[in-house]
Length: 392
Image (tube, rainbow, N blue to C red; front, side):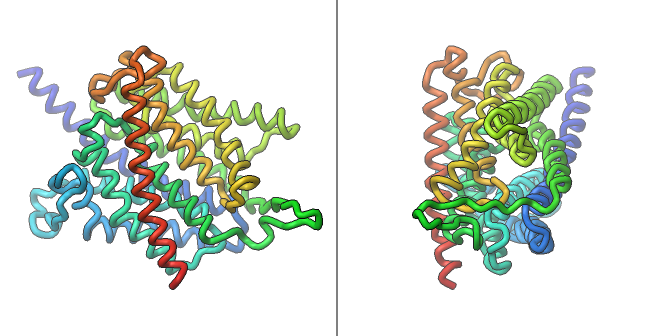
């Protein structure tokens, strides 16, 4: 009887924590708004705030109408959930907690895109593609991993969204920014034929820093809300703290050596990069794994910003592609490298140990398969959306 009572209490406690975690993820919308507003020019602040507000509001409408069903509806051949209207027809038995929790994650995916396309996107076009991401793109690929779809059955692991959320949002951001083209003055052709990369400093670094701290706080809910034991939750909090801290220190040292002084905005983005990278493996890695993941993330974000500016010539005002796309990919791969049976969440994950912990290449291969398939789906669908919007 005592064990039954304790199990019931535990279930209730984690049910409440699940919803608190959802609230923390919603609060991340404020963080994204502050980062994007602070890292861009003052004249665009109102536009950016409005877009971040509408991301969530439009996303809610689309998630009610179709997104939730495609995501968590009855599985159809492992590909998609069966759309339904239980929220209207059977509200007494509706899965309220899962709806709210997955809605705030869906909104995060759409929000990532706005930063990379800031200062040159029509508001109506933004509303349309935000709706498409929330209604179709995110729910279907998330179903493969979290809704009982084929990737989860295969053994692919993404605990909180390096792949399903951040890489997908980052790919949408990259394609959107590339199709839109750069802001006037970003890339200036010189007399000798070379291209000079122009700088557009953000108007309020303090606002951007506030946004990063809000996001870091929210990330404890982002990564930890689905935990089902104190040990698992504690381990997730540890890895979610170590990775961004190490990434930030790594970026500070690198930029100090490379440029003669630490780059504040780059270090702020490094904190986010570390958080993105640890999101997929946060439940199955240990402290050493989190440290290595953070070191790579801190360097990768600097490389990503340089690569977009000097190689791809894509204008990304806030570094969203470097933070979310590249580190989303890195975090997904990291599961196959650093998953360890010593992590409290490993047994629950039901996966193989990572390559560096004696597990061989199987899990790493599964991570690559899941990543490539998700990326392919995102690239094809979002490209079609952006091309149609640009023509109209």
